[in-house]
Length: 103
Image (tube, rainbow, N blue to C red; front, side, top):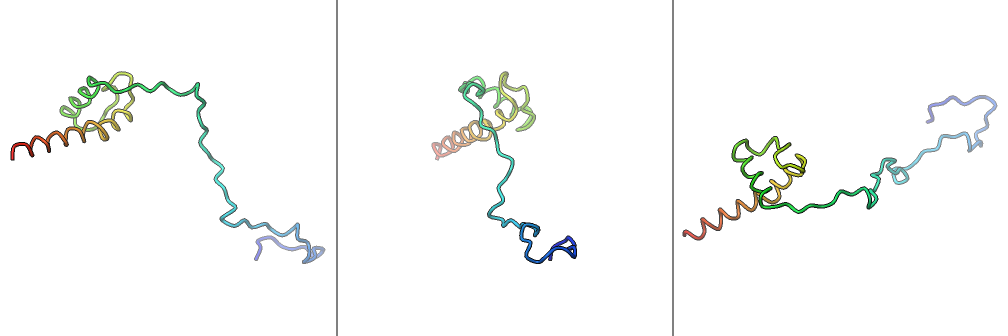
């Protein structure tokens, strides 16, 4: 049942006065990410071995947290992701290989 009161002069056939209900399929999100133009993109710079060493030494001293300012020119999120996806797995793999070679 609708939430508005019907006036006495309104006939049941007035389709344009009935509330319109949308199905879930018709609802589209109104917020979308704006794609950056090629002129707005930052240049991609490869990580150097010196940067990897800075991250490794930072983690040895402070643990895997507070990465802001560890590598000049990189933000904390970039450094944390590089630790998680590159440096840590590389170290673990090297340790596993070293342990397997001794057996």
